Length: 526
Image (cartoon, rainbow, N blue to C red; front, side):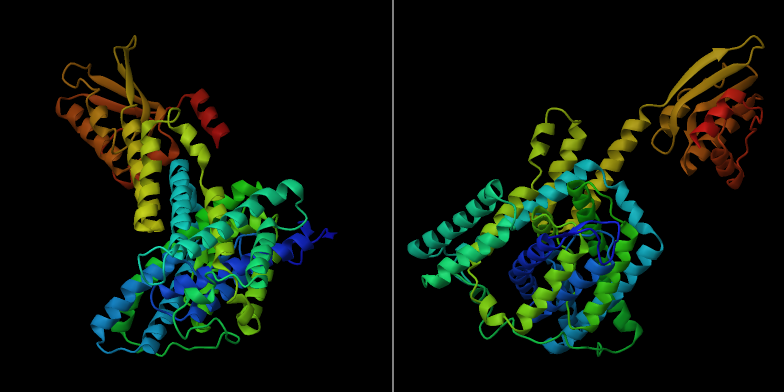
């Protein structure tokens, strides 16, 4: 049944059946991940599930990318491990409940930072992430998702594989799940293949009483996903400067990691769906969701690329799927915990294996002999940092820095100077390429101060003065000519270049006579 309107976006077509079934599939896949991420820093499963419910609901309604799913994530959970260690050092004997209050406060502050980033329109800086970094990020994340499923084939709490029979049962059910997810769309796309796979495998396990790993088996003894509506919690911590000094660094890291992962996921979903999300709106939605998560007993989080890909691969494109996933997750927590805890992990492991396979950019292998070696190096490095350290923010930051340095190095070598002497005996240096910190050294080598005539023109019609290093280089070259009694003109500087020079009080003589053709070209570009 298709309806040609959306509850929150009247310009978008919505297939209600696809959206609801896709949301149900996502909700089922969210449960084991949210539980696993909550256990990383030692929280109860409900702390992760509440965060998943709140993040998914708020970002689905108010976010900048319909179809993208947010929830509790491993990248954020790992940060709290460091916070907990510092809290235990600062406050020996601190109780788990007291630690949670500090965590909730950290999540709230992180949310405020994310909202501020959206209001200040900082989401646009995600454009600075080059494509090789995106490839590396996606590939590393696919490896993380794939490797994260392996503990399900080991005896709980040990490094020993399951016994022969349990291992073969687990492997067989996992492969059957993957076969259904791969093969069903070739027959029909009426129902999401992921949901069919979960239902079929669960029916086989429960119907035939097969003894295999279930969701309940992944939790610690005495723990359960059964709960009520997320309870309101006001963080009970000392309102002192010392407290702020302790939690603020972790709040900043949570905010930055959350935004990087969310905005990169947004870009990936944009490419898959052929539409364009709104980064700044997503920043505000993520921040709002994290603030509410902190006040409603959740551990915070960000966008989840695995669940987002499950959602989009099932055909979901609107906000309804995310809203459905959040509501169904809460329904499972409040009313269906007994049934959900019986779900076989093989079905969910098979689903995540297929997500990992679909996430990996296999096309990146074809670029090895076609793209610059520097791009290949950046892509491989980001993949390794992501996969080995599980630090997505660090991987992206390292990749961007290296890509920027490579770009600067390449452009530093491109500056050129064509030289000529006109009929009046004036020597012209026509500069090509940007003048910035990387090209200053090569720029200075272009001039023959002692042997040049008494008047020199440096023409920037095909160059730009970019930064402070460039201004300082112009000052120095001008001073060198002045010391030997020669006059220098700078010609064809753009308005922003002139502004830089004037603001720096540069000791130079700018020739204000412009070439009409050059000026017209500048106006056209603008």
